[in-house]
Amino acid sequence: MRFVNARVILGASVLLAIALAVAGAVVVGSSSAHPPQPRGSLVAFYGDSYTRGAMASSPAKRWSTIVCRDHGWREFNPSVSGLGFVHNRRVYGQGDLPDQIIRQHPDIVIVTLGLNDNFAYPVAASAIHKQIGADLRRMKTALPRARFVVVEPFWYTDARPASVGIIAGWVKAAAADIGADYIPGASHWIEHHPEWMASDHLHPNDIGYARIASRMDAALMKLGL
Image 1 (cartoon, helix red, strand yellow):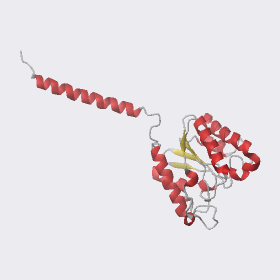
Image 2: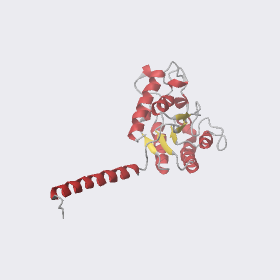
Image 3: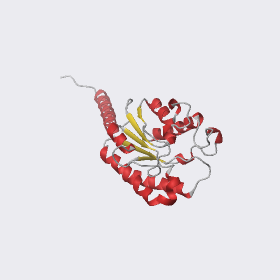
Image 4: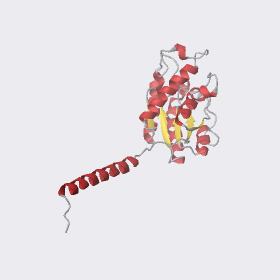
């Protein structure tokens, strides 16, 4: 009878334990609630002129297109200048932006709406609050497998009316209600930089949109996107 050296047995046991531990770690890691989105994912944007890219020199210079290009995503961006959850909104239901997004069946939905609702806030605060939640719940119900990323609404001047913070709070609460990721601080991303604004003094220029894209990329990276 041949006897196996005890050191050999011990060494083999250690190697087997390490292999099992590594395999276990791989399985645990793959069960993440939010696995990385593959390249080629369809991303829909629900926003206003800041997301449509108003005053950019070309659509390729808007932040949403830059972000999609950086990630290898396909972009669906029906955003409308001047639009809010309530402000300048004439269509609710069939044919509105949430409906257009739902019909695309995107993998990711990025919501940036809310800036323009500050102009309607004095006369429509209650309606704005209600509609934010209604829009997000409607899209989430229709797109249960999509990942939702809700962004604090942008703002365009260093002066900030109280409504900016109030509406941002409503947006954040509605995001939590549907289990969406939330990106805070976007209303501050271009403040104190007049050189990043276009000649209309309302919208970013190409440099401003590039700065927004950079901040958005960093925030999405923290979310694993």
